Image (cartoon, rainbow, N blue to C red; front, side, top):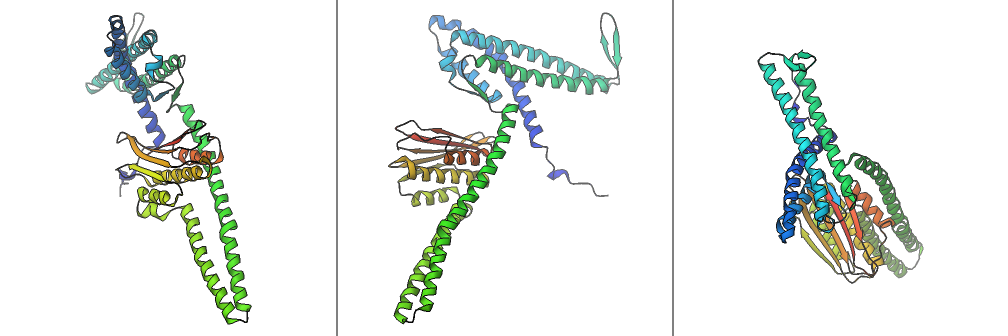
Length: 390
């Protein structure tokens, strides 16, 4: 009997994501106990104008909210988290962290105690004032151990919710990994992908009908005229004209195919493909490619089309004199993000809800990324796309 090879097996992505989130929230709550206490201790130092410790701990607390809870605050903590608000926030973080530490201590006591009792084959005894309960150690380990861990994860989620609720009194708070946010984003992304595919098909059909098809008809008419004319010189002239039209037709077909998907992206990489976009633009395009590592093909494709469509929009609508494109990689090795920024010095006033920018947002959202547009009237316009690489 041949056993199955488990090397190709992998855990489902969403349960693993939920597990990681639960661990992050538990660790974040524990760090809230430490940083909350430190923040309370540094607030009195402001009375003697010693601000550096308070600012340092406040910066650490901002990092905790970002790294462990994935909070995206509308303003920086320096703007809204003064001494009084910091004291209230620190008190809440400290209380929640203390409860979490006590809960984890109870979990450790139950799990380790039940494990030891299982090894020595002794029952677990719960003694109360009115009664005593004796149960086999293994069921206690499985039932109470798992339920205690689940309780810790649920409390960690409640702690994150409570801190977000308090912070929303002072600034806007968005949670990247909130379940309802992610489900809504997935539903919106699915609809957006369908719309983007339909828009792309209509664009290709329009390019073929209005451009390639018309030139093919014109070439056919020219060849028919050359075949019917009795004048040899006139026939030769028409054949030369047909040859020129065929060369133009080949170039037009190549352009349509390049707009569908550029071969340079697969053959030479993202930097070369974007260089071709810059060379083809009638405006000066300054490209800065600061990504050294290898990117997934889907990420490269999304970045390429974002840049190309953004440059086309600048040429058509922005009345700009130049375009600057910046590609860089942020985050850690486990959580990389490609950041694409397109900046022009045009008239501004770009509508984020317009068809072109919405098409970019749909393409990036299909990879769980985001697109932001900053375009005040008078310019400049900055389009920033963030695409996860994992």
